[in-house]
Image (cartoon, rainbow, N blue to C red; front, side):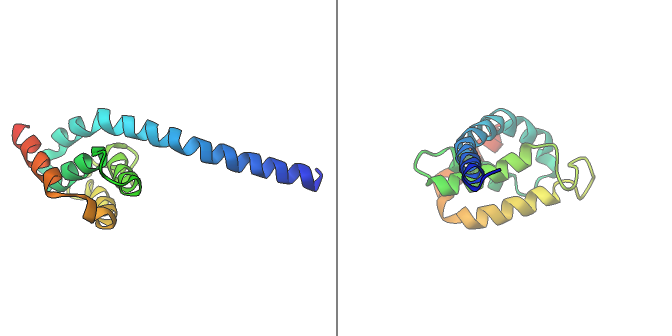
Amino acid sequence: MSKDLKRAREEAERILEKASVPAIYDLRTRRVREEFWPKLRRALGRLPFATDLAAAYYAARDPLTPTAAKASLMAALFYFVTPADLIPDVVTGLGLTDDAMVLAILMTLSAAHIQDKHRQLAHEALIKT
């Protein structure tokens, strides 16, 4: 393969990769919207961080939250709803530990964007469940 052809192929792969990022984000966002509340309700009794998780959900959905913070929070929420965890959620006492760790790290990075209004919405939503 010629050097020019190789460079062109590499550039095309980079472009395709960049183009797929929004599509992947949209897919993950849709999955979080569909699966977040049902999974949270199922695990509520075992989640000491349920309010933080719900506040992260509201912050990630807030149009005023910066894109980078939304992406970070959505990544944590996607990890929470995805059944493929480092430690399966059904393992008593340990199953949600990895979810809590990932959420804590990503929420720390985005803490300034989780506002009182998000925590209030989370509190109200959890009272209803």
